[in-house]
Image (cartoon, rainbow, N blue to C red; front, side):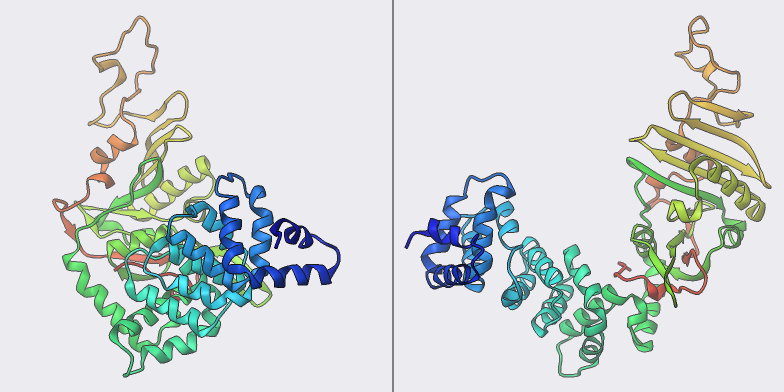
Length: 424
């Protein structure tokens, strides 16, 4: 059998020749597939793999097994395996499910990716989803994609498994996690939602807070702990609920959603996290575009508005890639001090008592340095520690009072509409 001629037949305009070549390749899969894989071992571009990928697709399940076996023996690289395992059709649905159930993260990722591509909602796929979420630890993002894709068809079976007394505790936990991953808290029944709320209240007093990193980029606000309640009205936040810091941080780092409307998708909605009181201050994190809006004018308007409701407000914005470094302080609706650096730094307002002025810096040279008299020397990463709280220094030694709040940026949406799990 000449493999080259059969591969050429797969390009034929004659359906009969294509079918005959595919059948012959499938009959000899045991010897054909290893030969095909060896022939492209050094290929570096997807285009070089296309003839082999076409042959594997026609051969089907036997080729799938051969690729997985070669990958396991390291005869096929991860890159090659990813390309080859992306070509099979519905005949290999259960094989994709078997990969998805594998404890190895990379293997599981490729399996769920195949299930998502094929849009398969089989019993094997459901079991793979439950087993993966039952294991916990690092979940492939493709598992979350699959949970969302199949939520409508799997929801009833997952709820049933969640309440099945004959199922193992591990399976029931996996079913609960898969429900939340696919449909958010609204996918759970009242009993499970109440259990989660109790667990949150148990966790809160014993938590050591860890806030989002400001490395590369980030933004946040700070308001006094005594008057923080005003931030909910000022930022138009809705449906606030107690939350652990871990869950709050993960929530604001998750994707936004489109608010459903009878005539289709409506505006976007996200979640905002208001921290517990940290050394006397509450910090606010969330989606910049939904809470602040346009970069410069939005920052000024937002910090002034929040200061009207809270008496005092601080705004911090960092973008290391873009070179932005900004901090703003407002009281009773008016900015009293701001620092903004993108190329050359600029200052407005009178210096605050803790600031080191540029003219007082030991490196200042009056002959060459021309700066305004109100010029300070401190950027946002340092200023935040003087003004309120440095997020990067929050930890075991921070004095914590109360609990954090998770709120929604749009009315009538609720927390259950956001798919995905949050670490409590």
